[in-house]
Length: 204
Image (cartoon, rainbow, N blue to C red; front, side, top):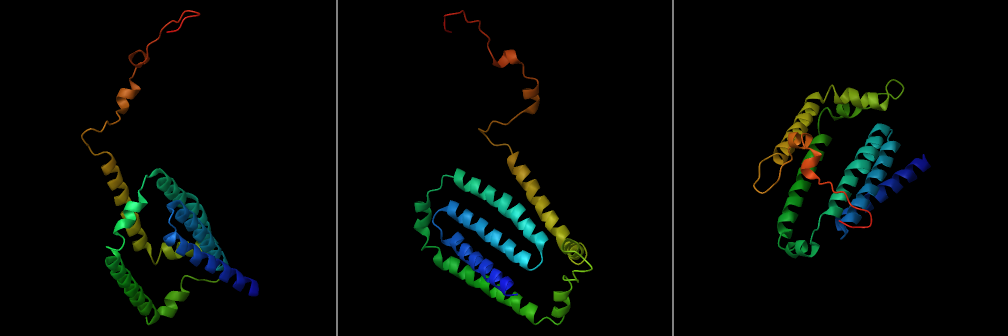
């Protein structure tokens, strides 16, 4: 029990510290690397809770794929950070007010969850006995029964986002050359290449 408590405090402290560094780091590449560290430590917390499936998703999907994509995008973008920081003080009141509103909403949500009449039933429903059901089975049962409509709504949101990305990519814009697959397939070598016989000892 002491080892589990020490592991929990270690993972939690590293997670909070790396999350703070994600925001305060001046180099965006360092921010992404601290984000990877935070995700690994959150995965450790999930393992301590017995949610090994969620821990695997965090490591494989987010730390292994999404953050790597973030890192590639950040490294490829040529951003002038000095110019970005010039208007920091100008937008600070707006950002502070938005932060206060978000904190107030979180307080309302936490208060409603705490004072809900059926909070005990809802809290114990996703945690069946380990002997009767595995972690992945329990997660799937809750996701596809109690939250099936929310799951379908999330799928529709992702579908709309995918269609929007396709439409924005294939829209017609002046001055942009578009790839024509049929012309590339029917292309002949003689149309794009010129063959010359070079004599020995002479250049072209």
